Length: 329
Ligand SMILES: NC(=O)c1ccc[n+]([C@@H]2O[C@H](COP(=O)([O-])OP(=O)(O)OC[C@H]3O[C@@H](n4cnc5c(N)ncnc54)[C@H](OP(=O)(O)O)[C@@H]3O)[C@@H](O)[C@H]2O)c1
Image (cartoon, rainbow, N blue to C red; front, top):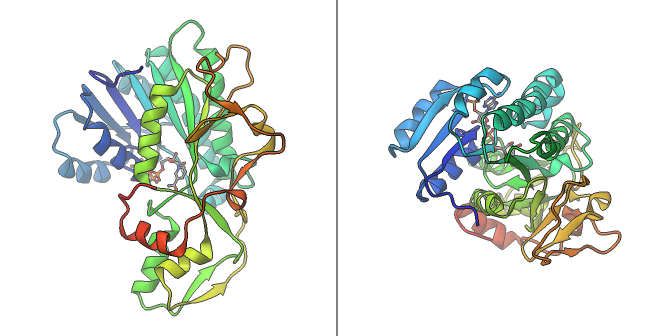
């Protein structure tokens, strides 16, 4: 059992959608302090006004800057790595920048964590990292590989690295929900949809934060934790937000998939199935096999893909979910 009591926690990207929610939650634990690590002073300034808890600290820094990470990680027990360039199109147009933040940044986190004696590191990944077709997904897959392999780099030091992978987050910055809502509120008659067959996984920020915290407790190092979450049809989402608008099909965008995968068929061969989540195990010999014997192997041919899910959100459920983002599914 890993206790957060008395621990110093650092979150990269702490001013982002995930970061803010994570900090709100982590401050309900008996932690020593939580450090927000990100670049933009304005976001930190605004966040400081919102959070008055003396256990929260703000650190300006860029994950591309290893020296700065070494300074920030001094005395830190747990690192949550949420900083990323995450917009598919921005990454396609600025590939060198995506590589610097998402891949070089990940390497810097690994090295600073080992050298500064951090105990546990969780990096956030995305469904777009499974069989990626865009650069964002490809950089996140590379990042996942770095974090899994980091456990062997750590050698006899006791730093452990794991990854949490999940899908679309309801209402996060730049996501489709605020976009559709904005269209509706500005009186649009049409909602643009790239393809009527499109499906996506769906998770609330609360669920994402809770899953990361429970994975901190479960991790031995090297796992990719994947929560079992529902799927939705994008046409159902449009109907839930703007039932009076027409759907206008605009065609699939570069780098966009019809359906997202979280566990590919190849990864499924080394994945264990638990009640509420899956664990993709690393392929290295240093992996400590699941000693609890609770996780079950998956059947041959299994893949965890948004259109083949056995849990679906109806239009009514999507409506409720959008109106009450704190609701747990
Ligand atoms: N939102 C989703 O639907 C979703 C789904 C699956 C996985 N994820 C993953 O979850 C993580 C968090 O996503 P989010 O939605 O919270 O993102 P977000 O709202 O865009 O926040 C990104 C955060 O990262 C910081 N950041 C960006 N580049 C940085 C750099 N070079 N150095 C330091 N900080 C940097 C940003 O602050 P500054 O700009 O001030 O630096 C911000 O605090 C990401 O790793 C993403 O890939 C998100």
